[in-house]
Length: 161
Length: 161
Image (cartoon, rainbow over all chains, first blue to last red; front, side):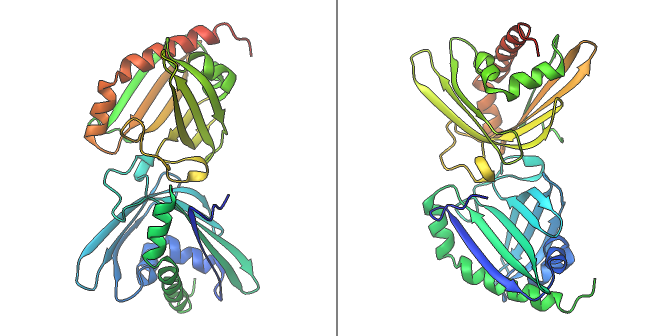
């Protein structure tokens, strides 16, 4: 993965849950819905077809009750270690049919590495141009991913696999 | 592969060369440059990194000498049988950085099936909306793929692997 600081955003943390628990949180809809959107937003629907070309769809609900659907496609999957998807494509690798609802497209790569009893959690979000990266950053990328990850850890600590 | 006639274009032929020869024509730049663009257009450059996330780049030259670069990304590869790529992404699955030079994005899936001494050759080209499919069709999709395939067969009949 070649990172370009002009085009990419990187979020990195150590978390005190195993890669297997983080993986479960990201790949099972019933878990993902518990943590994916920083409160008071909620994730009210989620569809996951975990294979390259499979759909990754979520519906986020704003505090005012407005629903925001997001549809993407998985690209590269290594269980418990690597998850890559994009919203530039839909199920079956079809180009997205709608305008980008954020105003830009992205590809996200999540890498999980065992570290002691926990996980080194690294997300790289790639954009097609600098303007898109800046827009995503200004929307609160770092804060959003940090808050969601706190919710993930909080939720998964209550789960026994 | 779910085909949607409103969004997709399908090109299908039987050709009298083996799937292995067709595969070579599509995946080795020195061969691809010989047939890829219907004459009098030519393909003057080609870069192929044959793995999911790898680049597929060509430069087509018009009869007037104007160069048209195309950059895409491989998505799914089964040697001698299946090749899937899109121009909605670039190398490393990064969203495309430029506006679509054709005015739309596509994902193409080429399927090769041995049939006697030859190959059943089926290309499905997927679009994000009906307008893009119509535009691509009106640009001469069927004629272009037919002429290029004739050139492919003509060239590969002169090649011994």
